[in-house]
Length: 165
View 1 (cartoon, one colour):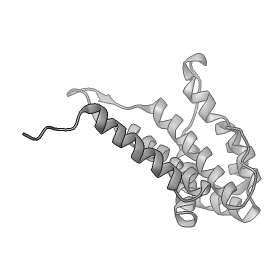
View 2 (cartoon, one colour):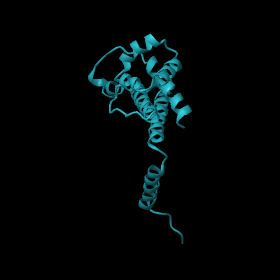
View 3 (cartoon, helix red, strand yellow):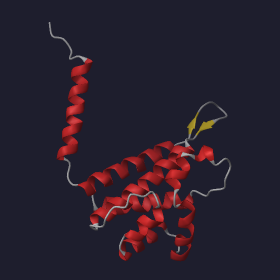
View 4 (tube, one colour):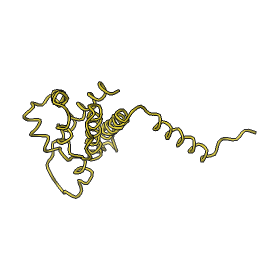
């Protein structure tokens, strides 16, 4: 009589596969880009509005914004790696953007469809979105327009997909 493999054997196989996938994976730039894509997709899924009942919808807004902010950070770091720039250990979106060459910055801004002067002004609002939104309960009520963070996230995702994938 043939028996099914135990849960431990299955988990060991999964862990070994995951470990070797990480070891064999292409280069660091691709790994950063892939992780950025994962958080971009997670943000989109958190943004799906799902009915709870006939009168209520569920929307995971805080995780949606937090995942998008992390996606932006990772995609910017992937672009920095692609340009052979030192990847700063920061969550500050403006600093990461300004570390990229001017051509890449201009491409990102053009993909957001926001005028350049307005972009650099508005970027200060979402500059530390990852840190602020993952601890948003500490701030209490505050005013925030998430439009730019989603436009910037889509722009960064598009560029890394075109360039690195």
